[in-house]
Amino acid sequence: MLAFLWNLGAFIVALGILITAHEFGHFYVARRCGVRVQRFSIGFGKAIWHRVGKDGTEYVVAMIPLGGYVKMLDERVEEVPPELQHESFNRKSVWARMAIVAAGPIANFIFAVIALYFMYLIGVPTVKPVIEATRSGSPAAVMQLQHPQQIVAVSGQAVRNWEEVNLALVSHIGEPSLSLTLASVSDISSSDDAARLNGKTYQLDISKWHFDPDKESPITTLGLEIYRPKVVPILAEVVTGGAAAQAGLQVGDTLLAINGKPLQDWQSFVAQIKAAADKTLQLTIRRNGDQLVLPITPTAHKSVTGAMEGYLGVSPIAPKWPDNMQLELQYGPLESVTMAAQKTWRLTAVSVKMLGKLFTGDVSLKSLSGPISIAQGAGNTASFGLVYFLGFLALISVNLGIINLVPLPVLDGGHLMYYVIEAITRRPVSERIQEIGFRFGAALLLVLMSIALFNDFARL
Image (cartoon, rainbow, N blue to C red):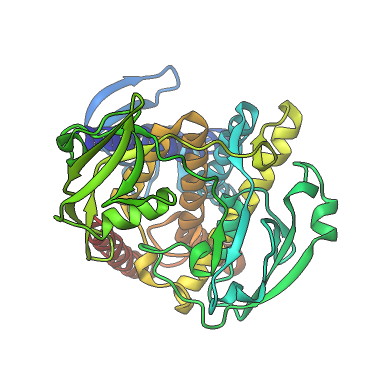
């Protein structure tokens, strides 16, 4: 219940910020173009707060936080007194109307730059994308590694952490091949471009590369074995009421053996627990210098694949990453502007590419996400910290800007399409054609939203 409330709260905050940025873009440019704005609303439905500003605009926060709008004076909607007709939206030039409509999506891109600017100014702790092996029979099997190597570029594009690797890999879905450039971890510094230029590049055949984004990662399905520091089997957490707590395990216990067989590492312990759902095991531990044997019965839980797996409810002490594999993406006030702009451009390019592949069929409709997935993402990133929440806001803001620019009636892109036609033909698109387009656009949008919601519930 607490997780639900946290996700809901983070979702409302995130959506409120993004909607405000989008609608402020429309509002600001409309005012600059001399259009009277009657209402600036964040949310729909009954107002829970409102006031009328000195500029005559009514500012509203409404009950349903799933959108917003800027109501402008328009003779097509209501009768306008002659003395105010010069402030009506429909009386402005087609170029002014295009600027007002485009300002909303543009504001989303600007907001993304601002959010990422503060993210880089604060600093993002991360780890370098190091792999220690590749899986046989996978696209990455062409790379035979003798020791850990860092991915420094994907198809010539420099990457610094796993997030950037993930974005770069996803953008190649549906393509015949991609290249990975690797360099020795010991030869790399956070600003060393020479490593990318001097690293060894491998060409990977991905013509048969397919994966389910709900259950699988593009990194692991490609066959890359991510380097992780060895986990010490000392318990840092025991979930209250879980199977481990019921068996008497405590924080600080060192795990030694299962059924008399010594544990090799934490991964082997997890594998044995998963394979022993509702089965009693004899766990040997060390506590305060004494060796104890406790009977434990992992609880049966359904995994994402649908199989029943054992669950104990413990986690180990977090391992320390080697210093040469840690990275802090932190920049000064001026450099952060450049980095934020570059990251926004990269997010935009990948998002546009993925949107195109959605229509060509290279990307499944299963990848569409709705408000539930966004709420979970907002809650998760907010729980990790401000810098991660800022990065999430930037990603969603970029996607919101791109979606609104799709030339689909009822979206900003649809209005822009009509105005472009008007600018070319020197006459507005007939109201009948616009109405047909709006109905078609609304129906298509409803279908896409239904698919996104279905995917959300399927993931739950």
